[in-house]
Length: 308
Ligand SMILES: Nc1ncnc2c1ncn2[C@@H]1O[C@H](COP(=O)(O)OP(=O)(O)OP(=O)(O)O)[C@@H](O)[C@H]1O
Ligand SMILES: [Mg+2]
Image 1 (tube, protein in one colour):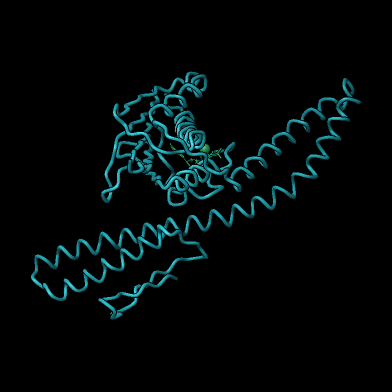
Image 2 (cartoon, rainbow, N blue to C red; image 1 turned 135 degrees about the vertical axis):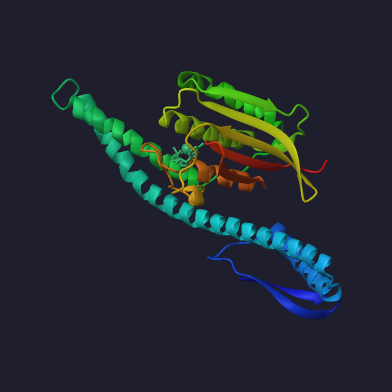
């Protein structure tokens, strides 16, 4: 629960309360915007009291609705951040506990494999070896998720990072025969970001689209990536839109898409989008997902452009 006094001059006219589920920490930025909202809220109340013509009333209703939506979306984001950090801590603890005995098992299996090479146990040991490596891989992904690396931010152009990601995924995408269409805004401003982490985000979103298209056996699959600049509340953002013509996001998971371990894929861990969410959040940006009217999914990322 967070409370801000609604003050006119030195007089407190009320208290503005917001209820956040779970325990969350608030950044100074968030506190500043809550305080800003409480000032606007009081101005709104005063104005509705003083100017009660019908026209003004509906205008203020509009403003009220806008701020209500804004608060709800902030609340959702904070709840999700809280969930992510507690699940992250849990995953990290479990992963550490498993990793040590696993290393010993792996060492012993390697020794046994050498001794029993060519014997009747050789094949079984090779399966055990592969499966242990798979467990180790899952554990490493858990740990990556639980301990996101510090940001190393440098100036960069998102169009360049998208092109580098495409080069990196070239073989994979050619194999899948999915058509990639890029529509990159030519005078995109540079932004401060962690290049590797942002590329990780692009890889996660593109591979998800590719998996969805291939899973649905869509023969003419395409993925479109578009960049533009967007102004939001007088702040400038680089906007990146990913669209595909796969089957769209399942209704069963769409409301929990960015939470960890949410997956519809047999081979999936359901961590890709929660890692993506956290990276974007650490950059002060937002990511939203929706299904397109004519099928397929759309992911929209906004990354802030620092004032020059
Ligand atoms: N473009 C898309 N179209 C349809 N469904 C999608 C799309 N992107 C994500 N999803 C759905 O969201 C789920 C979660 O994605 P996420 O990347 O978090 O996990 P995953 O891909 O299943 O596993 P991981 O990324 O950990 O290997 C996917 O299993 C899929 O159901
Ligand atoms: Mg994924």
